[in-house]
Amino acid sequence: MCAKTIKTDNLLAPLYNPSNMDFSLSPDQQQKREEFKTFVQQYVAPVAAQIDRTRRVPLTVVRHATKRGYLAPTVPIEYGGSGYDMLTFSLLAEEIAKHSLSLAIPFAIHTCLATGSILDSGSEAQKRQFLPRLTARGEIAAFALTEAGAGSDAGALATQAAPVADGFVINGTKTWVCNAGLASVFVVFAKLQGDGKHGRINAFIVERKMAGVSLIEREETLGLRGADIRTVQFENVHVPASHQLGEIGSGWGIVMRAFNRVRIVLASAALGASERALDLGIRYAAQRNAFGTTLAHKQRIQNFVAECVAEIESLRQTIRYAAWLANTGQDFGVPANIVKYLGGRVAGDVADKVLQIHGGAGYREGEEIARIYRDVRALRLLGGTDEIQQFAIARDAFRQIGVKIDP
Image 1 (tube, rainbow, N blue to C red):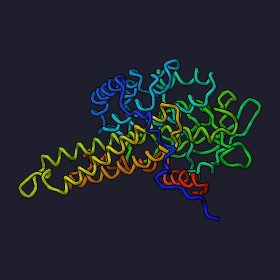
Image 2: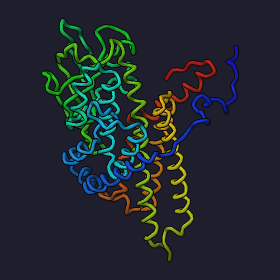
Image 3: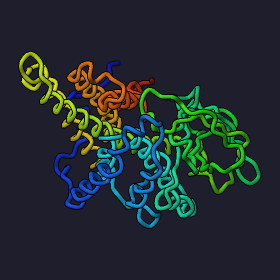
């Protein structure tokens, strides 16, 4: 029996509601964007190269961000945050990423994955206990999901949570935990002892000070050198029942909602890095002479620039659409997958073209375009690899004609 047919131009029809879409920035968002630009120029741009070279973010930057309400700003004011919507936070991530993805991505993980999961699924008592620490008090949070044998396939987690009389005992090792060396709070995912897959995943709030939490090693990465990414071991860590996040077995839903949020912000970071790269390329082409004229007068360079502009503007509008869906309470899961996939691709392509415009001068260590080129490669891995995003997008398309596919 053949699957029912459907017109291909209707495949994404459920995603769009053209009667009331408005991607324009409000006056408040326009003002906030100018404030973000000022903050970045004062505190991020001057130390961006230092962050890459020393492999650490100066704590002064975190303090200034906290003072301005930029640390987990999507948390409501009543819990110490700034109450930003998704689009406003994406504008902040975009501006920071223009100069430092090593700062923008840890901020996104702290806000969307870790702190956002407590806001999304925590009890009122948990919100009152932890959110002010992770906003107004400047503490950092990490999201401990990935394991050596469970990357894209999060259902293969081996970390175990054994119920005890007054809570749980967690044992396992997490890899690629961003912010680990800075974090005082971890959102940790583990399975209850026994079998099962997604339905058995549970979330816990684990504090760094708890006995049995150990930082094993920091990753020496190709890019994002300022991001503190480590392996973390949990050995007989006793977690009180009050630190269980959400209901038993609800961990998979917490993961999916967290990734939907962060994918929009990662795409915004990709946009910022792409904009900065293109600016560097245009300025270089306008002043570099070759064969009797500047590179700006060479058609191939003009084509590079035109292609980059088109990609950047396409990404910007797709981000605005996904953020609008999130802000209006609509389902934004599929657009988040699309924009995350598009963001990594656009950033990589723009950085590659701009490095080509620079020629050998752009390939030197210490050059800003070289740093951007290294950093943006991570955007095709973080928050879901390209391959996982492609599967998720295809899964939704096939679902509309009643066909279920597996990765």
